[in-house]
Image 1 (cartoon, rainbow, N blue to C red):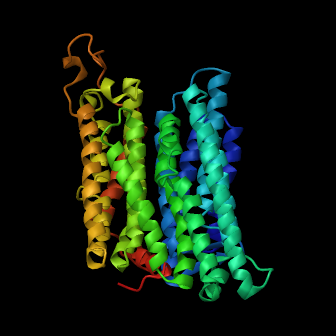
Image 2: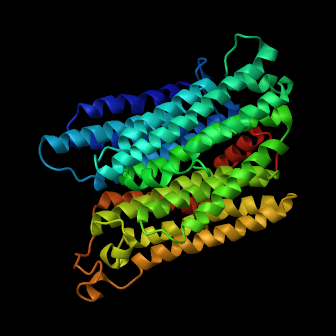
Image 3: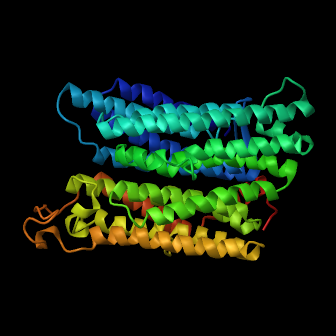
Length: 497
């Protein structure tokens, strides 16, 4: 079974190379197969990880319950986004369209490879390298449409993310320095090594490393005040890339913070790490809730929803109750499925109406009889409506907060999530449930006639898969997945429920 780690690492990278030199139709098929196989391999690893606690392949690859959660989220989005892209991508004829298609599919596979590698590599230094690669690849994908807006968003993303990763590199160096007092000047930054000696590290040094890690990787995670790249990049990137950025890349950056959290809890106890995450989480959730009330761009609306959910994750980790941490890890999975599905629906709407402007879109359900209702369902899922997975995860987080000493924070969480719900759901229902465009007065915004029908059956399939996954996460967790979440929570220093 450890050999599967090598396969998961090698497969998307090999497919990225192949698709760059393949006809676009073949690249599309190969990408879908690669995504589905990678997700299947990840699911195969779950019982092995639950049984054996961790799997290793050499000194560089390692997976435990915590990293398994994030690998499942990333590989699921890899599979569904590949299916969505097969129907979403409309290429022009000739060399230009072929060149774009090859670059797009090679970049998508390379991006998914780097995000799958991050939870599989063994050590803080390799983790930093993997996340740095995600920055380079995703920045190129944000700018791939070669518009003024996309180029500006990509440069902004590169500048801010590079600054954040520079801080994260400093955090890595500081954590290495903390270990020299125990292991000497020559040792590797593998997780097992760091955790075994963490109780003997200097508390002040670890405290500094953790703050730097939260600030540095929080830039990629989209935490306030280093979130400013996120709305532009999500809005201007091709929709498949927006889904990966929001559902997977932000989660992988959170994973990096959790690795520092593991060490910090063992060195200085849980109070300081939790308080640090609480500050960033509350600020991010407050900002997102307010911005969601005033958005006029469909994809920017979903981008600020991502900031909201990253704030929820940070707040959830500030609660001491085991059930809250399990809720956080479940939220990672549910948010990946919900945000991917929502962006797939948004992509269908943008393709159908030719605009992201919420003021120019009306009668979405009338024009899109399948993806339209599913977009509404995905938004309701993002708003924590039952029976979907985010309702379950946020219920666990709030329950943990109420059972902890931070019941006031839990109450504030509920209030801010409710405000965000109104902003997100109001805008979406306005464009999807309003009268059909054909019923609008002549000359009004969006009153041009549209034929009824879906953009592509591939998009419908990707959204169905996402909603089914959300229902499973909300109604009945598979037993092995539930055990995986419990084990991952304990690896974060949380006692058994």
